[in-house]
Length: 232
Image 1 (cartoon, one colour):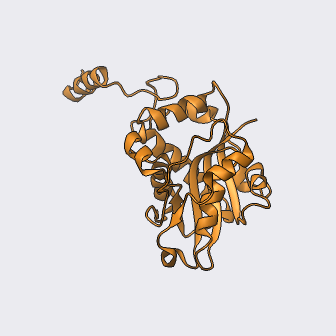
Image 2 (tube, rainbow, N blue to C red; image 1 turned 90 degrees about the vertical axis):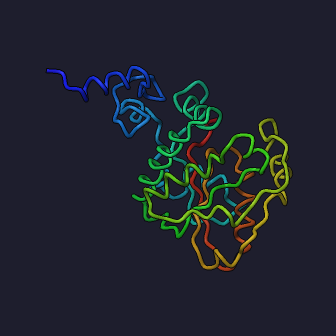
Image 3 (cartoon, rainbow, N blue to C red; image 1 turned 120 degrees about the vertical axis):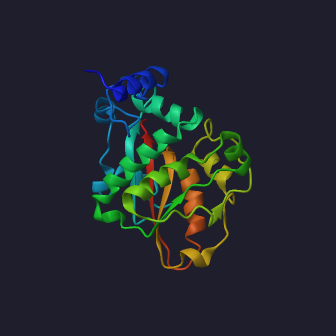
């Protein structure tokens, strides 16, 4: 016999369907926005387990890092491009939280990233206001839940607007980011190992500029984690 709860659940599902952000399937756990098939299909790098991985090589000779990683490969017209678009431009913060949790759970498995705190790469204030949130900060929220770490989102800021990096070469990107970050509370991060977080790494110019500003604090160690690395 059908219960009242089952009828209620069916009506709610009809009015507010809980479907996978990746493929639209309705076969997924209530607390997830991704089905198991999409989670399995996301192209993991496993960089967190390997020193001298491609992300770390981006920063060789540019930024002294304890470690660096990216969780997934990003390619055009892929599942990851679709998920990134939903997260960054369609306001799907719940998806960002889940992706952050996945990052945190994987990074926890590596002894190379025993950080004291997470630092989201800051957005220019007007851009964050226009979007409604900083995607790196949302990732950090999910990571913090998995890693049991504090999120320090007030220690560094990005007060100056920068031109889009999309069509710039590596040298142009570096010049575009020079002096664009300000460390406001160096004492708060003294003697800490920080994990700087962003959504995607390409040339690394923005992360390099932010990382160098963080390293102005006394005895700071720095690592980097991004959700994706852009495949060439």
